[in-house]
Amino acid sequence: MRSFELVPRGPFDLAHQVRYFGEWLHEKDDVNAIVLPFPVEGWKGSAAVSLTQAPDGRILGNVSGPDEVLDGARDQALACLSLDIDASEWPVVGKRTPPIGALQEKYRWLRPVLFYSPYEAAAGFIIGHRITIRQRRAIMARMSDELGEKIELKGQVFPAFPGPHVLGGIASYEGISAEKIERLHGLAQAALDGWLDRASLRKLSTDDARTKLKTLRGVGPFFADGILHRGAGLVDDVPNDDLTPHAVQKLYDLAKLPGRDELQKIAEGWRPFRTWTTVLIHVWLRREVGLPQRNMKRSRKG
Image (cartoon, rainbow, N blue to C red; front, side, top):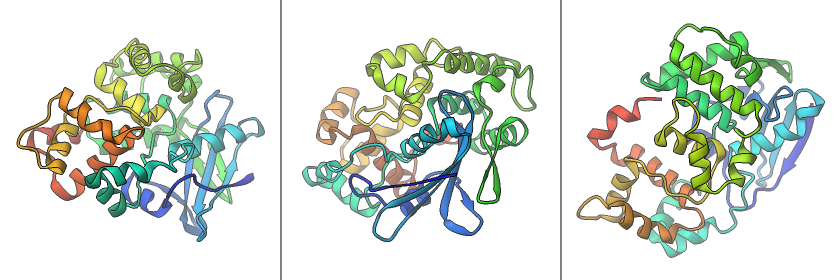
């Protein structure tokens, strides 16, 4: 096990991140320490990373796994919490855009939380297609228990989702259709080919990354955007989804839903954190306003 620490660049509150995103694993002796187990990009093994925040704001971490993946695992865990991004200018967006500033203060400058990798994001979208989020999480947890590597950290054992070498060899799995198995094989091969990872996708232009992702079987525009935003962690993009126009209409008290051009114009004030701002207003809409009725069905899907 290797320890590390990090001073976040920009405001960051781990407790609030944990409160608003996901179902987290914890150290048994420290409920404030979250644990992130995952296959490490490069696919030489899996690791588990525990993170907690000291009173002075420092992020304190421990990473456990094979020696050759420890550095990558640390970086991957930090990226999952958007701690790899210099957010010193994140509050500036709120200062020049008061509706956003009010939400930033309310939610303590919340940053997006990502899947552990674009590979796991893609697997989650494919497995979760046309089933509920709860069903998708249950299937992925069972796959981790049954097929993933087990990593010991401080006397606890944490299972990671199966890496692409394993996923690409699955012939069938309870709860996953034959078509979805074929789709999973395709994304496993893309990961092994070296392009379905965070660094590779971030190097591409947004349009090129979307085009590349849509070559995967079963990945259309909606899933491609999800993999980019929730897997690769794009910081400055406006997703073309159904929910963002509703959130903007409510937040800015507009008479009607903004079209794509109007939405892009409004979002100019959110640069260079347009994706982060979109995530923030989605959190606000879901928690305080409520989803528009026509979006309720989609919101329950993985």
